[in-house]
Image (cartoon, rainbow, N blue to C red):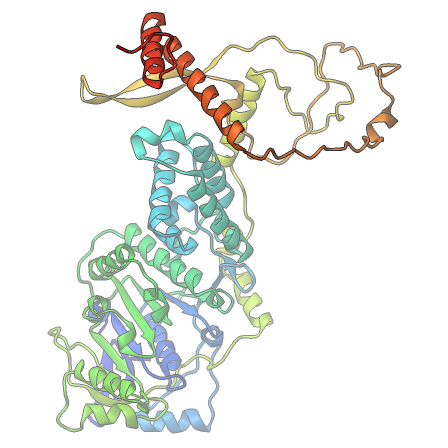
Length: 583
């Protein structure tokens, strides 16, 4: 609800607790245990921003935020809450909503391209290690150099196969790219496809400008991401939201502080964003949260404990709504104490005790005042939302989706020429250069042998090597055999019949050996065991003589006839076998 051009969030003993629109881009945090009212608080804030004409994006992981599209109902519980908050009037109202769904089941499909996702987030989505992430960066760079568009996963797989087969061309410039690493990335892509990730990549890609919309009454459109199924894959869910935040940051220009934000972004289940987050991605997230404020965007994290948010991000969250926390273990007691210390203390009560004593629908709230300083924490009762507390039926959701203007733009996918098609065309051209026939879709299969083609001209490949004389990389050209031409990355095709007359292959009328002869088993051969000769004194003498004779012959062959003769004579004299008498 709006009170004096402010978002009325709740009421405390000191009066209405309101969020100033000019401070809404200072980011915020809504935390509390399960079932304490975080979703209702999010719903109340989203309604307030919409009434101010500010577009909203939020993820609905349970399905109950879809009730924003239908008016609420007045009952005894709502009347009691209104009386506790001191609200004189209450008008149930439906808000303009656009429903999105990555899988296209409960909303308009949300797609992006592989290039827009980028290697950093894509590596996190695929669960790649440091080495594999480095190769992914090289894949994106090579695709840019070769002019290959990376739109969907089949484009990425085609470029991976192309780089893996031609890794030697890029080794000197980028380092070694092993086929094992390429194969590991291909396996992770296959897993992502089995999980439905291929639906997220394609065209028409999401235009962030469609989030910045108002209805005919000037209310901001609430973009609801139906994430009930997406939430079952936490990595995909968190990576999608991180990409969305980065895309919004890249789209908007700098604007500084304004009377109200351009867009408010709600991160539900925020602890998933930071789980298993690499240092590079964490640094990028912290930088985005710090800088996106100057572009007129407010980011609000919803999680169970403030400790789920890293300190670098937590320090940027100035608007605080703390619902009840339960402290049954020493670790939980420390969390409650740490959460209480993040507020500006109120002398009227002890914050640490109040956190554990809050009822459902109550919260400790501290917003920034008009001077930008945090107000003392107040124990307040959150207002009831004007829209429905609960989910929409499928018929109600379909009726709302049929009225919005984005369905015509995103519901029908298309596939334009990209890396997959370009590499396939280059492959066919290379095959034709080496005598392979043109593929024709409606041609009959070949029944005769392919004719012998004339030798094709030698194809050349160029690569860069380091020249020590000049200290630069120079281009070298080498000849390639037909076997080095990249293999196709397309579905099997049917080739056309050759235009020239080809003599049919004639089977010989007779073979030199009957075909049954190949199936006749060979006769078993009898192996005679080797006879073991026992060594006696005579055999040892004979072996010694043979060894001396072999030594003499070896000496003659190696050192020459003269040297061999002298050596032999000296040896015989030493043994007393020469015919001369000793003096």
